[in-house]
Length: 393
Image (cartoon, rainbow, N blue to C red; front, side):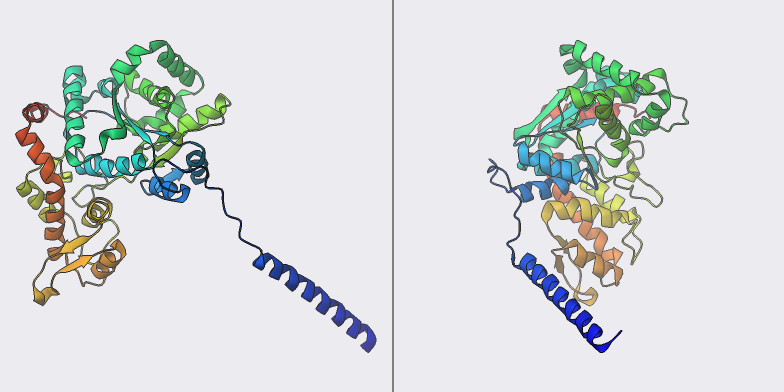
């Protein structure tokens, strides 16, 4: 290439470079596109704030984009959770659920609790005794009232009563869902009942997932706010929407499943009283259970005590207070979970100081529940009956 040609080529490249730089500068100086937040919401919260609150209840959301779009266009969505009345209530179902419900209703949601008495009977809870199951259901409602759940936008609906009010609508839905799915797909949902695909399931238990899928549409739920263990049937509902060419799918907000207190326990169990704190446990019960709990030093992941703090006490109090003598570092108030975890991993916070602090926080949360079941005659009688029932798997 000649000197003249090289110079010309260089000049051309420099000119192109200037044009690209000019375009980039124009883009950079252009005003940022602000997303339309939709009309003002009655709650006074912005779309971003409502989205963040809803999203904070879930370990997984399907999907974020759909949730945001729904909140933008719907001021009062319906969220739902269903529960089998199957025994005493552990702290995850009591306190974590109250925290999540309060967050969702603060964004404008109506929360529908599906008191799944027929489902508990199908799954042989309380030996299949419907009257016992319904008694347990009433006890669970009393717990949520006492712990501080805001009930102004909460509805408790009995599955047996509601289905019998509109049987044609419900059973048509169930039959259509059953027709559109093969047995293998339904068996994959057996986890929702605490069962495995390889168990010898009764015909009633095979029918159960079709009914739970139908519940979502029967209740006109926009949001399924259940645990990660219910994910498969919630996905079945979204697949059903594809089958029937329905564009609006239920959004899934799946909350975390809390581990048991003892080493190797992946989740809390109502049949094992040592695996969890229960909502009317005495102060002494809480202290003993936390003292015996698995809490390996320097380890945060898989540590049930740290999970209790992160998902129960911290969201409740927005802080965690440790009391200890000066030789061990003195009293300290943690205002972020990250700070607490960092101290624990570095050995600046020892299990011997963390456990009593956790017990104190849990007892403070549970005291109003204890008082309610001690001082309210109806609640006291319900608890006495529930404690007398044999828990069946």
